[in-house]
Image (cartoon, rainbow, N blue to C red; front, side, top):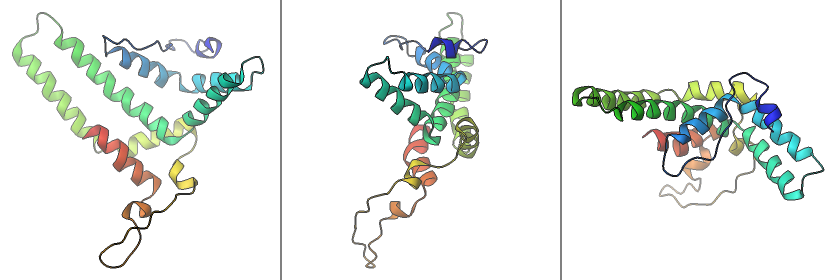
Length: 179
């Protein structure tokens, strides 16, 4: 796997996130963000390697397939953006010489940053689609089991059944993170 990762100068290698230092998650997310295609190639190579045991090959194949989805690519884009900003702000707030007024300003700018992210779903989606080479949501391609729900007007269609994969992901995942 490291052969794939070291192909690009400056490519980071993800490490196990620290239990005590949450900013290590920003480092791990950035490593995934910067080396996304290399990690995916490495997983595909592992899944095809007959010298690996079946569980390892199966796990690698499953992860590679998940990385090929627009949902995972959007999450990578989003979390990298958010965690980089939180990490930077956190480090500045930990400075022993920081005064109250600049600290308040940092926190306000962080809130404004998150408020601005609420309107950028389409940008994250566009970047993710370029990363994975497709913009099809999983729920749009797999058969969805419908549960019949009685509505006052007699209509039996659940409102979430009428949403596209993009709408479902935006409402159930993106907005949950951002709001």
